[in-house]
Image 1 (tube, rainbow, N blue to C red):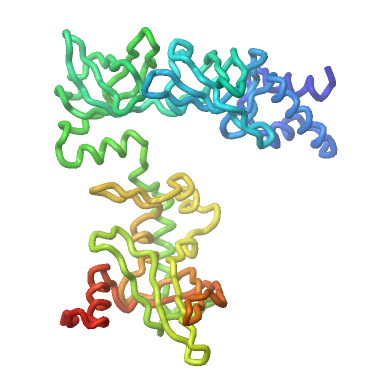
Image 2: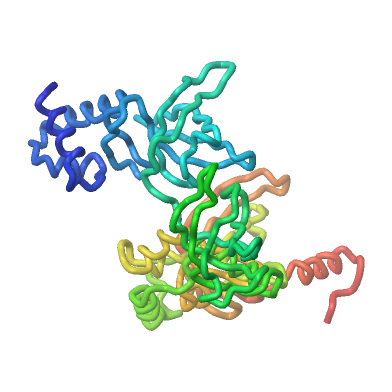
Length: 391
């Protein structure tokens, strides 16, 4: 065994080792910089031979069972499941079929270690058995509380588990039969055991207005409240914003720019204008998208929180925004009559609708009118002489 290989294995098998990515592990080993290529080659070889396992976030773990792979498990309605192995050197291996009785207590989304018992062929999928659950995707689930044969149970939503989960004394939270509840899993179910959890929150009676929306929020762990650091940064940005400060931006505030959205739109983040160039007679379509990034400091509290959320979430009765409302419904909302920062693309089209010159810019607009689709259609119909415009 080479000295470098020995150092890597010794580090990752130490009891105090916390899984690290390759670069931090290299730094921990205090190796000279010129040994990094050899280190990377050694790590790749250890992963390839199954002596190291590559986790979902590219951290390295010791694979204490030779010939195993790690990946993410998903359960099918039938009870069987599949594991998608993590990529090694950018290459993904085929999914591994996991029979229900070979899945231990893994749940969908868990990171698991699998012993491959059958390699993939042109006729059959790879098959294997889960030997260890490395990391739980979540321990929180939403379901419906019910009682049967003096047992208190929760039927978890979806096809996460075959069996209902025993929850002990749900009366401590005031749960009633057919209530939607949140449970914290204490012991995950297996093929032969229903598992055990505890009710942590009662959402309300099944079918009651708002309960389904709240169930989705809890089931997916959607963050509602913003940390105070993000709120403070948003307030600071808002206090510094001035409609007259157009430095570094193309000024479109004198152009006829409008927004067109459904009557029940939850946000207003895109606007358009259409003109005819008097010289070329080309149509000029300009599209403006709210420039949210203009208010976000890279690496700051807003940036960190937005990366966690990834996007705004639109539910039937609620919106969970990616940024605090002072930005999402204020500075980054293309409100009628307000100057707003935008990312702009300007496209020329010939009378025959062949695309011509295209330019991009950081811009600023003033939305002249907030239209609904129906209002715009009425105007178009009137222009075609189908009916008179609405006063």
